[in-house]
Amino acid sequence: MGRNEYQEEEAARPKKKKKKSHKVYAFMVLVMGIAIIALAVLILFYVQKIEVEGNEYCKDKEIINTVQNDRFSINSLYILGKYALGRGGQLPCLDSMKVSMKTPWIVKVKVKEKPIVGYIYAGNEYAYFDKEGMIVYKGADFIEGLPCIEGIETGDISLYGTIESKDKSIFEEMLVTSQQVKKYKIAPDKIVCKDDRIYLYKGTIRISLGNSVSSEQIAQIPPILEKLEGKEGTLHLENYSEGNTTITFNAEEIQEEN
Image 1 (cartoon, helix red, strand yellow):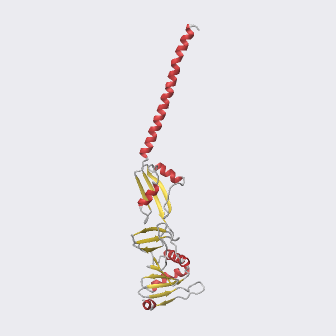
Image 2 (cartoon, rainbow, N blue to C red):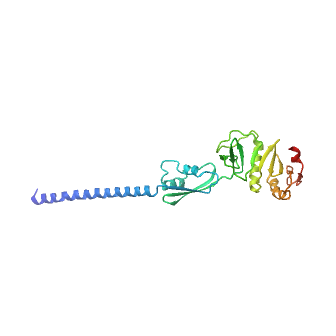
Image 3 (cartoon, rainbow, N blue to C red):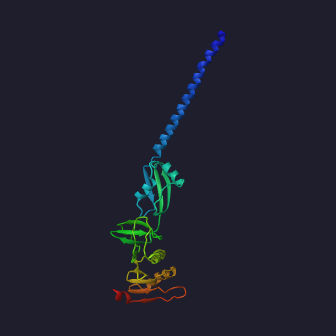
């Protein structure tokens, strides 16, 4: 090997090392850049507040705990992704739940609760149920404008459980009654089952509906109640149907029974 060739080989070696060091430096910069971005995401999208909107009887805390039901739910991006993929939790008392980002650190949750159609007084608590008979809320708080269900023997009444009754058929009719009175905005004081017959109580008026309740029967009540204001007695709608439109009112019946 000649002197000139040896010198050329020696001159080439530092260049390879220099090129290799540039690659290492570029890799380190890339890693640091990714780490900075990741840290920024963690800090910027760290959930500081969750705002709940649309709920009346379902507590904010219950909804928030459902949204943040795992250790990664401290990040707003993670929460949004979880619900976008349909993997987010939802309480049984809710019809729908929409999760969005108000700011990177504030998550907004808009909910729609299942409508309550009535309640059962159980011990020292009120058990409120939806049209399917599911207990959507249970507590000492009294919600006005809802009928109390009486006269039906029920089993265990637990939150998010469905009310079960030995008198299944008549209880289903009472559920239908609860839905219909809500639809026509009647707001009776209570719905009572007595001798397998269903009665509504509204002030001093008792309304007899029989053992099978229809929308047509309930639709007659509001205009008649206006005419009966100040009176006391029983309004008989048990025989009312499309083929039989007879409606009677007995002003003495309640007084005789009491």
